[in-house]
Amino acid sequence: MTTLTIEIPEKVQKTLTDLVEQLGGKVIKTNSKELDKKPEKLSRKEKEYLKGLEEAVEFVNLHQRGKVKAKTIDQFLNEL
Image (cartoon, rainbow, N blue to C red):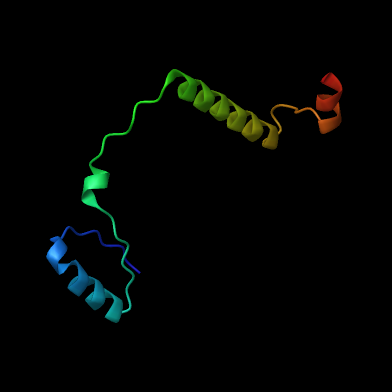
């Protein structure tokens, strides 16, 4: 299968969608207005959260590769 992205006027969307589906294709609808939106700016708290999450994922990846050793759940709970 091939993926094809096209821009069409809204008035022909239904006709073209029906044709593609009759030919055995699949239509994934998107709104070009949504694609043109600029991403929202993150707040300071959101940036901190995202940084912590990225660090946690990196630690897990390093642990899976055997480059760092993670604590067991018992070791973690004993610290509390």
